[in-house]
Length: 235
Image (cartoon, rainbow, N blue to C red; front, side):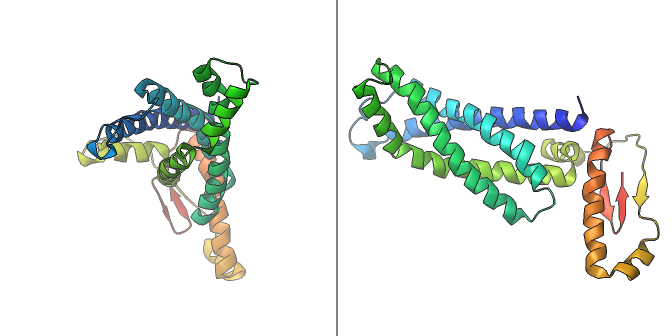
């Protein structure tokens, strides 16, 4: 298994776990809202256990579908595109994923609640009620924020490198520590001549493609990108 695939699988597993935890906290938030005094009356048919199953299940399914889509497609297909392109692609895809998750959960949870098969009129009516409830809209609003934050973290991780970004999160660089490292200073040959020949715009497009193409081979060979300096990559 390639190192790039290993990193992507780790990212996906982290997203699935994080989204399931978010789903659990959404259930706790809903429970606290229901228990506040301003509602004035108990919510009929509410079950905290069912809420946890529903929200963590949505986190699991969403993590597998949405997280996999972000890791294996969006951040590969749009690696060299502006961040706005990524947000647009994620937004459209996320709406479709939420709709798919809502449909899957309706077809699996509602028959369990009614105790009748899916083709039963009572169950079909409950499925329609489930899909037209305000719950999917609420899920869209809350999970859109989660997806946006996830995509931001993935973009930052791609920019600084997954190891470097994780070290920033855990505060590794807050305390000085001596480490042995081998540095490679990789730059383009005759870059000044190329810049004069190609012109500013084409030359910088060449640099962008160069940085994008060299990143994967570096990660595949367990290298870390320290920084980009002009036409140089410090590895």
